[in-house]
Amino acid sequence: MDKYIVCYEGLGLTGSVLFRSQIAINTDINNTDAEKFLTMFNTAAINDATANDVNVARFVIVSICKL
Image (tube, rainbow, N blue to C red; front, side, top):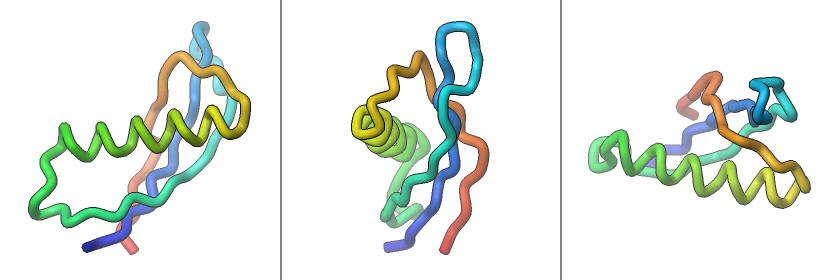
């Protein structure tokens, strides 16, 4: 299992940045396809936005770093 830090922005309906954050994703990238990785990211990002009481229209990945 590898740990990845995904930095992202939560955007509003007009494309304005509502907040910036980062989340950790633990996965074996050799056995994880892109669709599964994005699903893991979206789930974690939605939970993060909800916890911070921010209503975003979409998320944009800014960077991904492997630890």
